[in-house]
Image (tube, rainbow, N blue to C red; front, side, top):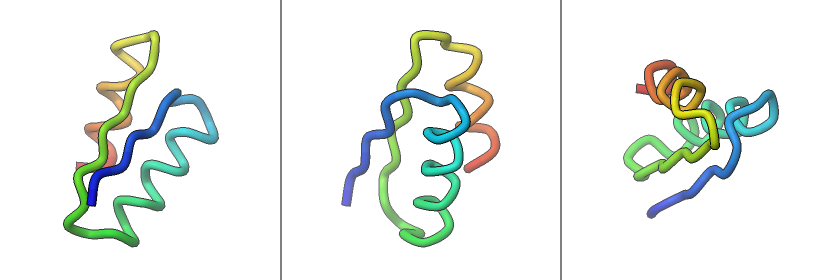
Length: 46
């Protein structure tokens, strides 16, 4: 399964973390207009 999370603010980052925890082997792609913010979310979710 592939999931795209647009926006890495409070809601987007929380959604990405929840998806990572519940879907396990899914590919989660995050996108934000601030690249540093998107990279921070990627580091947190692994």
